Length: 256
Image (cartoon, rainbow, N blue to C red; front, side, top):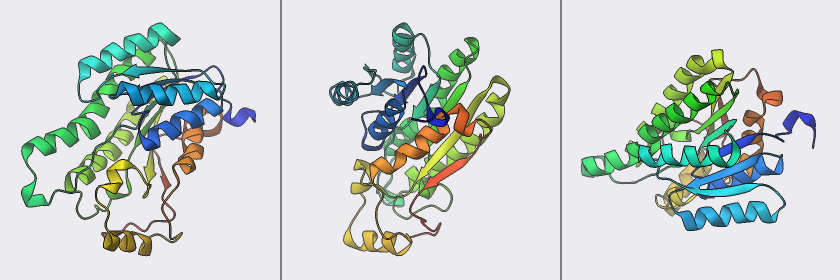
């Protein structure tokens, strides 16, 4: 392990760390020395991820919180601080999707997706970043955007709108937090075999995606580790903030 990507002594909080992609990001950070707080709404699956990290010789603990409920986020922040003293890295990997046609979207579904993908991320950052500033703890916040965040994909109206909001939020907070030494960036995944993508896939859609992806395949979750560790490392990306790192197989930004 080179010093450039050495995260020894750092504490990383991974919200949605029990998800397909979030768990891989958590494991990638752990492999480079970070102490991991795995946070998920489903405590059973969160415990499984933390256990896997510990079985590989790293430090991790599982915590339960629902990103759409700010009180649980405040509570889990206190629990993590009691466990680790604070944090240096925050990953916002929780997310929801839906393929409901536009004219059939109900307010309840809109609110549910926005509460997780946008509102929940905003207020999670507000709480965790405030504590970082109070502790004079420099570090990195990494949001998870989407290939649908710039030119929206068909069939995922609410999801695409929420991820466009994540892009705006990322750039705004990068400027806001720069004086405190807190960098804010986003990873922009293409198509990975995550649970929320499986819900909107059929043969025609898969073919269309492959036709717009030069590498002609889906991403492997492990292929997000490098981007995550790079953006988390002050040594590797200390002058990188307000940026979007695409991990998408060359996916062309076109409506499909």
